[in-house]
Image (cartoon, rainbow, N blue to C red):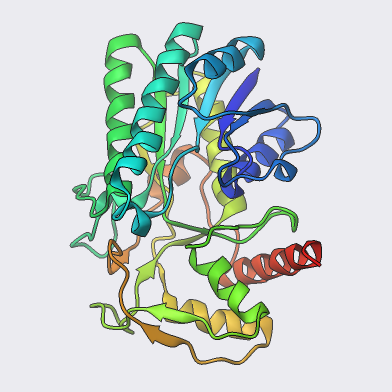
Length: 324
């Protein structure tokens, strides 16, 4: 069987590709390379450079490679920026998913694993979010991911599409030093880049209603996340029943200030972060239970916070050697 990974040249997508290959599954990648990197894709994995909005290329990729299922990670992923660029966000994340589903139906492909987000919950009024918690996204990004889930639900009713969506928040670390997060907005790459340049990282807001005033999130190692994408694909292949939505969460969460302390400990660089204003669209706390995913998708936190920081730092240092 061959699985299509959209966005497979990106940071998370490339780790999903790596996990599929480790499981012995053939993969084809479709990526516009707007934020992905061709060098993240193994030489023996086909890479189709195109957007999911390009219907003809999507259909041709599905048919030419005899694709059995799709893991959909391609899209616009910056919650804060989405507040300023809502139309781009909806075009990439909603229209792109519509095109992909249309072409899957045309090609007879009926298995779909969707990369959703904990941003669908907005700011929960509970300490631990479960799949039954109300959704109330606070950014166009979170809204677009929720619409993606609705599209899968409705397409399943109409055509029998078998699917599941994985909601998660901050994905960090690296399973291989040449696969690193290059997002200009994610906390880990921003902090590590600043430290590597001899500058001081900042915390965006320290007046949130949390124990230390900084945002609390689930921080998940990218390798753990990738394994559950593959487990979801395998469950669909085997015809096992899956929930429509799973949280991939730690159940505990870590604050931004705790991240800064861990970064200082691991890197050996002593610093006091600068306090900056809040970013629009950032909820105070999102911590999710991963119990259902642990039951069905082999989900577990296999890495400590120190592991996450150390692997991210090693990958950042490797990336730095490439630029010199």
